[in-house]
Every structure is written in C-alpha cells, then in structure tokens.
Length: 449
Image 1: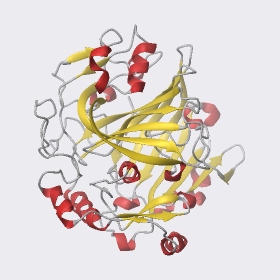
Image 2: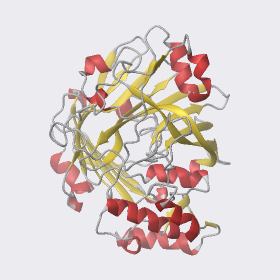
Image 3: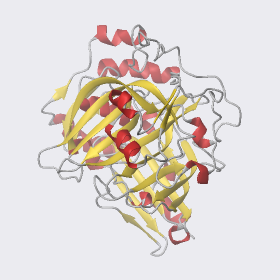
C-alpha cells in the first residue's frame, strides 16, 4: 500500500541507529555450514540431534489441508519425564515446563522421542533468505527497531541481536495464504473445558508473495481475519488485523452483529486480555509471541539443546475430548524432541508498561518458530508459560504451528487455540485471497448471524 510506504518514509529518514547486515563471507555459510534458514547443518557429536538433510518433503497420507498423518507413528518414546525424574534433565527443560510437571504431578509428563529435523521451505524462500542476509538491517522507527531491505524469507538468518532473532520469528515462513476451521478452548481452574471460540481463520502474508520484492513491499507483512460461528453468543463476530513492520501503523477492527457496525480497536496491543483466549492470554502472547517489538529490550543469549514440542502431527489426530485434559494437553498425544533453540530474553523497556516484566523465548533454529516461552511479573514470579505445536506439512513444504496456547500458573487456567481436530480444513493452503477480502468494508457483509 502506497499509504504505508509514505508513512514509513519519515522513520527511514530519521533513522538514528541502524544495525547492519552480515558480511558476504558470513552470508556464504548459508550454503556450507549453515542451512538456508541459518541453522547449523551438522548434528551433535553424540548423534542425539542429527544433521539437517533437506527436511521432510515426502507427501503424507490424506488430502492436503486436512489433519496431517504422523510420519513417525511407529516410534516409541526414548524417555518419559515427570516430576519424579525431571531433576536428571534440568538443563534441557524450560522453567515453565518444570512448573507444569510440578503443578500436575499425577497427570502431566513429557515423552521425548528421536529427533527428526523435518523443517523445509520452497527454494525461492531460501533464495530470498540469502539476499536478506546481505541487505537486511534494523532501523529505528517510532515503533522501535524494524526491518529494512528484507523480503520473502527469514530477515536475519545469522542474527547478531535479540531483536533480529525475534523478528525472525515474526517473519517466519508460515505458508502464504491459509484457511482453517478452528476452535479455542479455555481450561478453568476447576478442570472444566469451555469452548470460547469456533469459526474460520483466514490469513495471508504479503511479505511472502512469491512475485514480490523488497523494493516493492509496503511493510504490511500479515493480514488476518477471524469469523466466529460459536458459541451462539459470539456468532457473527469478525475480527480483522493488518500487521506492519512499524507497529504504530498496524490496524485492528471488529464487527459486532448486535450493533451491526464495524469498530476500529484503539489499542489491540500488549497486555490487553485477548477475548478469543478467554482472557488467559494477552494480545502479545498468541503464537508464543505476537507483540510490539518496542515493549521490551531483547538480548540474544545464545543456543541451547532443549526438549521442545516438535513434529506433533499426532495432536491433530485425536478427538478434542482426548487431546485436552482438565489441566493441560494429553501427554499421550504430544511428541517432544531434543532440538537446538535460540534463547532470547526480553526485559521491559524504560517507560513501557506490561504485566510481564520479563520473558524468555525459545526459537527453533530450523524454522525460527517460538516453541516455548516463560513470563515473569514485576515481583519476579513465573506467571505464564506458553507453547506451540509444530506440525510437518510437506505439501507446502513447512513445519509450522497452527495450534498454540498457554497456562496462567497463578490462576490455574489455561487455553488451547487454533484447534482444528475433527474439522474439514486444517491449515489448508489456498490461492492468494483478493485484497478486498481483508478490508473493514468486507466485515459487515459477511459478519451476520
């Protein structure tokens, strides 16, 4: 959009501090010692993490865009970790994972399986990522450090800062245009499961239009609309989101059928409770991280080998009642593996306000998806732990996390979002939507009971 390009121009002109791209020699390692996305090609010396060999691109049984089959269904866990034996694995468990094991000792465990590096992307995404390594920079804007000179791939495959790493998560390869039939469920402190949203999610990433380019990109990287058909009290509501590099330019609307009008949301940000999560999560917590970059100061801690949810295709096969137990996901259906992750710390920036004063994020080295995160309040208490369930989807190809959620460790509530079990369309790739699909005018036309 030319309007967004015009609005971004002052930020570029007024740039006071720019973080430069990597050298040509460093970028060349994306074809040698690093994968095209910036991960280490080699496995670990003990073989626990294998070398990356191109990812999983073999088609799975079933129609594309339906629940994905488990490519490793015959495998058995190497180890099961519970509150009884977790001390032996302290260095490979996040604080949030340990807190859940301790909070629910009778029902919660993690089953760790053999590691498979299934992540893959189309060749043109790899090519764009290589170009981004040479041209990508972070520049100052009114909304914090934002990317410049990047398009259609991981913006900073060889990150030098925490801000670059978290932008890699924000601009991760998610598959272009997607439609899903989804449901969100709240788990109450008394162990009840409540449907808080059911409907259709449609998303599109203009940043990943294959025929685009950095010099023709207006910095609107994602558009998203969510149309509700359940529960009855929310049927007909539609939410619309436009995401820009500069969060000051991002826009949000909601259509409320009872009022028969579209309303612009004034502050869909940060630690505002997210209605579609039943208030368990705030606006910056879906997909583990979905907030403004300038709320926190980001520090790249480095890489660690951690147990994380991965290749969790089995979670899509279960019935909802079997997948969602009273207080957490059913461990029978969640596959964990040992992977290298980037650890990124977030500390509340001076002058900013958020209920979470500090956070720690674990980004998969192969996909840059934030798989786990923990958040602490101003008094230093661990208050929330967040998770995502990455699925192998070779038809894209991609490893992405349609479902995510989190736990409020103090209130004892939790939420699972993006659950498509039993639905017809499960993170289904579709042709590019017309731009008019994601406009406020389009909401009222379809948001009816």
